[in-house]
Length: 424
Image (cartoon, rainbow, N blue to C red):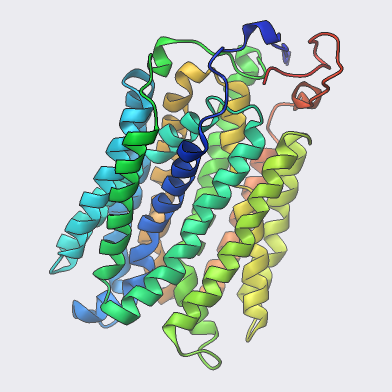
């Protein structure tokens, strides 16, 4: 296989490649946090909602949330296309305002099917962020790895916020407030984004900004296939854990912790600590061979998942923390590969197709979570996740060789070459 690597001279850089204003970067990162927070409100509050709707077990209500995750993946395709051809700024406004409206409607649900419809609508608007918000964020970034790492931290702080904020809101005002309060926050963010983010002169699909590293057509096709397959297995782990961890800790720590709000605090602390991994990984992506780094984090998931399956007492907390550190740490890699290898004019569409496949398939995890735990146990679920992590590692081994020197910054380098600096 011939992997062609070209270093792009500074003369070809987009004159508008300066970083976004801080206010815009902040709102894009907050948007990522809201994106993940909205998707996990239901999983965190499912026990309370199930009791109100007359379900004997939370597992029986869990399948009603699958529509949100299915459309979270499927909606990425049209969202990515509209982001490239209509405009990423416009689509982010649809994202903020749409999430707010969907959250308010969900809070009005009077039964499981109305709830399912509201959650599905949330998933449809939430699908906009990843294929649109992340390409918009890195469109002007001089250090995309670090930017993706911080953005990943923000997204997973949203996961932590779902565990903490939802638990507190449910305890104080009920599960409906858990949708209304974030909905109001999304509405405010949309108004601020409309004010602070300057209109785009041209949609990304009407212009051309080359990727950092130019691969041969065969190598690029292979990289895209492998990253999509790895994203599917990685998304399965993410959905199984983030949707099931609240009930997992409730079950395993039942003799030690009975307060649902305290369970939320414990889980939020796990997600917050694990999220910091993405900042470190983001910086390493700019310096270390991507394939080697990715493989190491995926393999590290296996022993922690096995430990979580077999642990009891406070060792459950330690094992779950280790597993989430490795699962969260693996998240930035597919976005980093798209930034590295894909032209900016089509990044949203490529990301949308990848997300549609990975999240569409992994939405089955949300549907299967309740029945699997009910039929077998959380121990069996974590053993299954360890097997999935092994499959992910095998997939990552198929990635093309990484042209590591092309992403290293050497300010004193005289000219671009296969061993020189890449375009920033």
